[in-house]
Image (cartoon, rainbow, N blue to C red; front, side, top):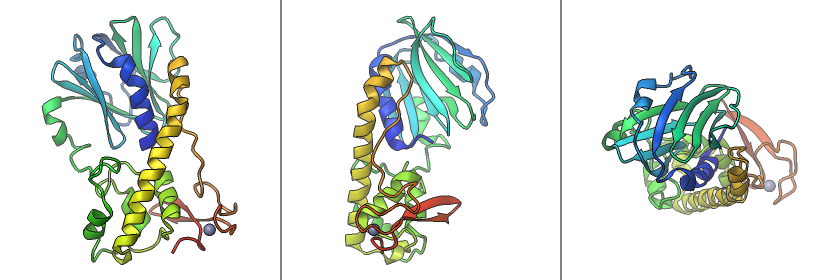
Length: 273
Ligand code: ZN
């Protein structure tokens, strides 16, 4: 599943291809996503010029000069890419947005967990998918102190807390596991029992792993553009994620896997307290 760094990579890759382009037409080939594509809303994009592309949590937001924003979530398998118009369509290509430079912005989604909505830009904050989102981990509003204060008297396991988009937006499973290993904090530890220095380490580690992963995504950015959408996702060196039984890079003991809130957690019982 694409997480924050992949979405950020896609955003950076798409920016130069989309900003300034005008939408000539919209073709909805198949609206059957879990949350059906709102075809009528998409058609309202005709004639609009793309003025910017932003990311909020794992959502991509394409702003236009017509006061409408295209809100996209890639779900598990969604892909958003720009291709020359004559390029053959891919399987599960749901939406094609024709641009004024002879290319298309295309959206495909094999497993259909993705989402594509057109929203009035001035009402974006009220959209049900966006309004409850916590602060972005990379924009400076999340600090050790803010998390320390938010968690006094609370008893949730720290891993589940980090993955809750109401606490912090867009920290997926991989990065929650990796950040906690770097911070030396056991994923099962109750949030209320982590002191300020612990939260400072969590926030620093979280920023580190996300930034490194975005940089790694950046190295595949060129491929992404050249291949016109053969999206190369990030390749960052994971220390615990999906490494059950393999030695911890710090102490050599085997990495352990447990399940928390239905998701796999990987950690080192020796290094993380
Ligand atoms: Zn270890």
